[in-house]
Image (tube, rainbow, N blue to C red; front, side, top):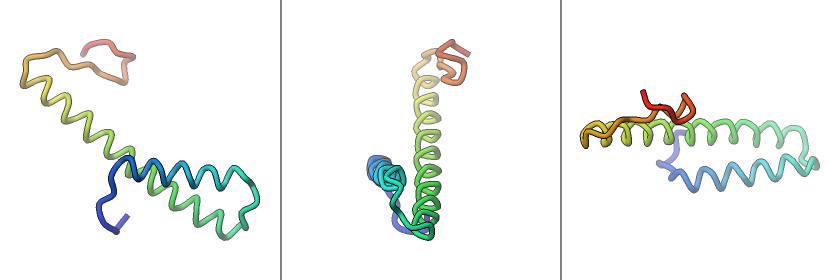
Length: 78
């Protein structure tokens, strides 16, 4: 997304609205494709922001001598 930096909450709200519109099923094909593309962009923004937040938390935990938790291993410590 080349526009201004979007906050995570704003991206999620927009993504939820796109999903709602697409689930209604009465969106013309061209508009549905545009909405889908925008939704994929918003999904990537959210994913990237969550990954960045996770990295920051791990760094803070390491700085504080806490044992980091690997979220991808069901909460087991690394």
